[in-house]
Image 1 (tube, one colour):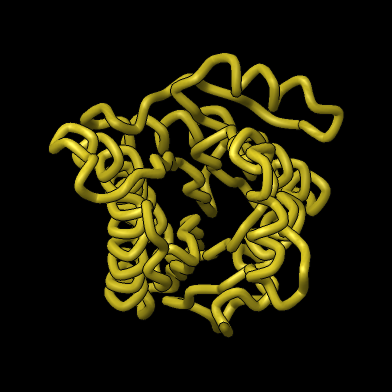
Image 2 (cartoon, rainbow, N blue to C red):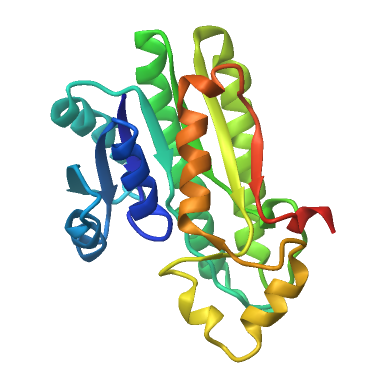
Length: 240
């Protein structure tokens, strides 16, 4: 399987590592050269990296073309691009709103449209988008982020509905509270980790490997009859 992974931060390293262990050939794209270097330096990494900003017009097509050139083809893609900004809604400017929606949702549209067009032309494939429990739960101080993830869920579901007959599967993973390099600083604020763990029925935070395992499964033939699904990886957070 030849996989394009967009986004080297957060779950990126674990996702790439597990894909490689499963036998996949991987291209990782990110706009941040330092994050790409960190992924490439991992002992688990076997693949290719390319610096690319999915906020740029035409970047989805460029990512697909690069994958075909570097990997010899493209069978699947993972969208892990995302940012958050924790503030009350009244404190966000219109430019703040636009920045978060552009980064989280518009990049998903660009990548999904370009990858979908390619997969349809070859008769099938799979995509996974990284959503969040915030796409379902009304978390305070997550207004633009929650809107972007809820929008992503519906965007991906429409893709799944339009492309299912042609053999293209589209699913979402929705992590809960997960410790990654992107969340570590927030979790170090006194009391935050403990407060979050109290909200989780399993009483622990998730790991990047917990999330990566779900991504690898949804891309695999074992999930061949699953499409349009939001898989919550949250230790039971959405139960309460």
